[in-house]
Length: 413
Image 1 (cartoon, one colour):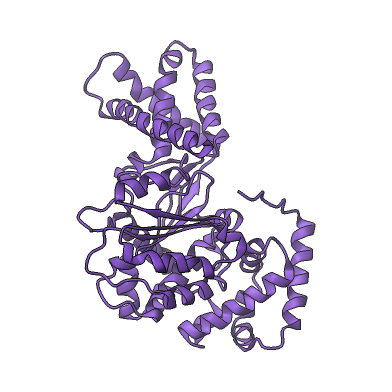
Image 2 (tube, rainbow, N blue to C red; image 1 turned 180 degrees about the vertical axis):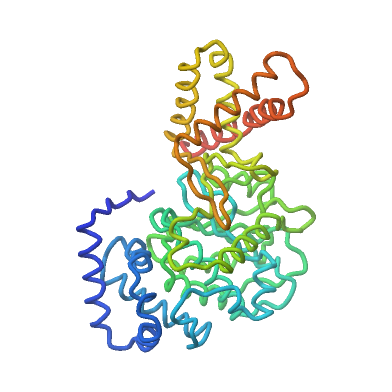
């Protein structure tokens, strides 16, 4: 994982200035000029331009080229209407575009990898119809541009997975389409930190081999090919720190993709766009980290790795908590919160159309609440469902820990 650049204000300001100077030197930038004339506040927005600077490691000249190319591709895909002066929305999609998007053939996995990077997955065979380059590119653009607005993704980049397993009846991938997607990727402020190609059909081997020719030298060194059945490929992905639990979209049955998370993500985007405010995405978290603790109810929250780990910690500290004074209880709860923070976990609460990090005091109250419910279980009561749930979640964490240990051992070989 490349080290993050320390973003001092002096560096940001000098890079923004250099970027603007380099933009002015570019002669052919008609799409950029149209967007600037249409909505200068969007094109010149500090947060928007920082996406391109972070993608190019604060090299103003490279960021300027990518920004100009971004608007050129945007005009090619969505036309030169008012969309040029704002972010692309679902309302800009045609029925065919929406069908492609809703199929889940392209989606971001619900959890980041162990290094905190977003994981983008393309399952070409899941779209039950003829793959049309325009719809594929529009969908690719929308998902990538949307996820790039989150600062965490801008700083750490993303992992790309081409997953061609278990899909029946859908269309197949071609090198011509791969070439178009590669060109599209260069227009979006995303830094690719890894590329995994998984397949089980030997006829796909020439296409997978040809992928290398569309990658830059840096990405080519991080290109990995996985051949085999679903179980084998998923295990290989896990050794690279990619979470593929039982609720993952990649764990479909009988060739059917698990679309539960993707449908939730689309609903979240619809809610976000319905109450749209410029720059609002900068403060919301769309993809929780592996060790984040999520507030709320439901299967996704209950079985999230961070919640399972928190339940395990509460179970470990329960006896000491019960024997402690009121002041010591507070300190123990604070210690559990600190342990979660030390592993880069956060306490997140769903607010409207995204996750927001809560204050430490609310996080401590949440942990104390778990301890109080666990007390009933410790005293032998069978009636408290939450206490029993905490114990079950603690037990469920054991396979997660064992899988992580196995992953670390394999990666060290």
